[in-house]
Length: 431
Image 1: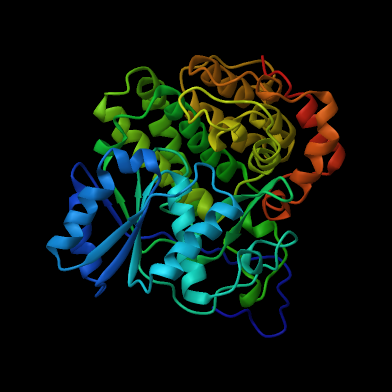
Image 2: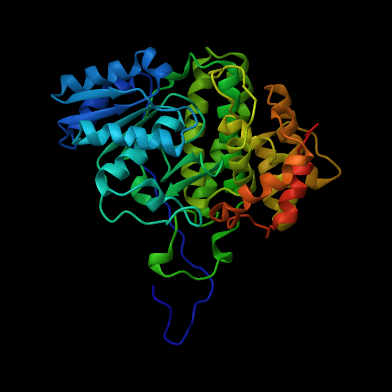
């Protein structure tokens, strides 16, 4: 309903929410051929990484496509924790071998995000920097529908199968950033918990912490009505926490509370694996619309500036801080900082994450304490010091965080460089 004549709305009254259709359950990957055929596709590129390809899952999908008259090729050059260079190489391969009628992404967020970028660049043209979020890139919006993209997550973490953004490291700047637009959202998310059973515990733990932070940051994000009024063309994917995103975040936290520790310590537990795959998707449906804030903004320079850290369970040929791990390392301190702006939300979030935890005298410690207890139990490194950073690195880390204004804008409390520096300093060790 339009505002009555003469009333000038200055505060936001509108929120947006979107998510792809979902197919969930054991054996769902074998129905991808049927699903892609519904879009009239005849030639499809499957994007994955070498380890997932070696498991045979992309091959099964290729067979499913063949059964429905669709030819396909497998590109297994996706880089774990993708970079602008690795995405450019994938897009170059797709351009050279194309044209394609559709794409299937198989793997963690790295594969799904790479496929989003490939879909964008092969459909719209241009270069990555044309679309990367400002101020790092030009922030150009795609002007036409992209090709059908079916996302098949093999990890329970990023929720990228639900979201309209892709994330990468910009090697020349040593910073992580991304592209965000509703046209990037996959056409269909196909989630088969059987494909996650072989994940090492270290990967399960790191990916799971990404879900935790997605749900918590979404739930504690600045509420949508507190933003200034936007014109339709100004509306962005992250609109602040809202009644619909809250529902998905709450459900994700309930699943995490019941299954996360189990899935790390008992990786073959199909029920727990199923719950965490659902939690990742549900959290994606939450944060993919409301937004994330300080922990994710801090994670980008932590991952982008890594020197020597090589985490167990991951490829050892190069230094890296996995995304879920990097997000979690400053989260306890970040939630201490944001607590005064929304105490009730932080307390409810803590109760959902750790329903059996005793109440603390200091209410502001409830959520950080719940996080630390979980992180210790699943063997997440003890702060940024454990992945190679010290106090002397903080002046270099802070600018990388401050570049993430798209994320910091959804923090429920205004944050400046001094605040971020203090959060990093207090996150050298978390316990």
